[in-house]
Amino acid sequence: MYHFKEYSEAFMEYLQIEKNASQYTVKYYLNDLETFYQFSKSEALEDFSDVDYRSVRVFLTSLYDRKLSRRTVSRVISSLRSFYRFLEREGNVTSNPFLQITLPKATKPIPGFLYQEELEKLFEVNDMSDPLGQRNQAILETFYATGIRVSECHKLTLKDIDFTIGTMLIHGKGSKERYVPFGRFAEIALETYLNEGRKTLLEKSKLSTDTVFLNAKGTPLTARGIRLILTKMVEKASLTVHVHPHKLRHTFATHMLNEGADLRTVQELLGHESLSSTQIYTHVTKDQLRSVYMKAHPRANN
Image (tube, rainbow, N blue to C red; front, side, top):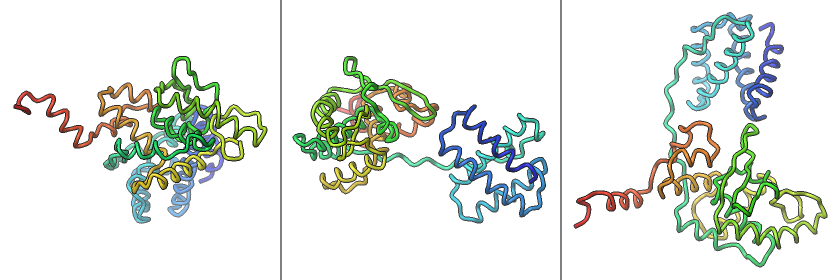
């Protein structure tokens, strides 16, 4: 394909500048484009305009032959559909052959979440007289109070937290920002850490940083460091479940909906663009289902 490098670079600029895509999104799109380019060379397709429905079907078969998951195949097709939409806009092709391809949607698994009893065990493991224990408690309370992502947590700065109205300014995906409230437990944990533990940690590095969460050396914690902290907390609590930051996000959303929060509110708190992304949390526990039934059905009780 004569113009592959030129077109792929232009597409990358389009994703970064116009679509404000993250570096990971751009990376996956370009990887998918490279996969299609290698296929096109093997099929002797000399230009992107030579691709038709038949060649796309052959490409699709080649993806399945590689034992790729349905989810991965769907992502590749979606990437190339967007690429051809870009080529159409630029006048490089007259049609988008990937529009004709429909893939059956894979069923989304119900996200795992923690029960209240499991959470209580986690909340009890940290030594609140120790700077690292104070930090860990603040991290845990922040995750459960706000449902933020680990990427959002490690970027949190002092000026993002407003204790006067109990809200945090969260810097989300694609440079999008949102305000999320937090409750009394998170407030106490954060104030304890900021007034005591963080100051002790900061003395070790002598850094001038406004990053909220610091490591044992007094420098900003990474997303990987936060995951490791959670893993150690789980070990201390002797929990048999695997806990990662996103499971706490799932837990936040599930508990909010189980207690009567409406879907639109949870969508806004999570920073989801689409309501369908939030709908995966509308499952309820069997206990909650029974509780609602017993309270609501006229003939459930004598």
